[in-house]
Amino acid sequence: MRLPIDPHADISRRAWVACPVCDDARRCPTCADRRNCDEHWRYLLSNNGPVVHLQCPRCTHTWSLNTRPAATRPGDGTP
Image 1 (cartoon, rainbow, N blue to C red):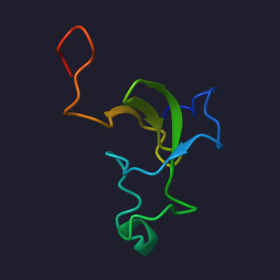
Image 2 (image 1 turned 90 degrees about the horizontal axis):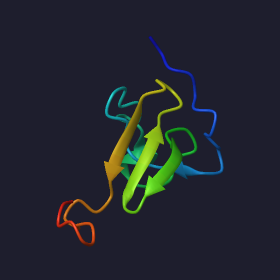
Image 3 (image 1 turned 30 degrees about the vertical axis):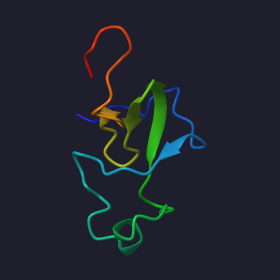
Image 4 (image 1 turned 180 degrees about the vertical axis):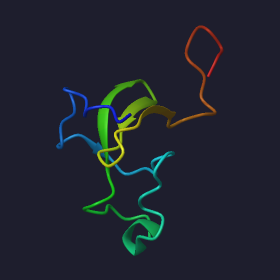
């Protein structure tokens, strides 16, 4: 079952990371060169510090990604 696009999704807030489900950018030369592709982007729904919450417009999968996995949160010592 596909989820709907999040109502807070805004095309002006995008991120260029691989979708862990559909991997639609796998054969894209622009994405392979690590450039911003017009076709393979993700909705940037929100963030909590270095953790971004994303949704793929193609398969509608939502996930969170820690953009600084080695960093810890102040005060609790956990990543």
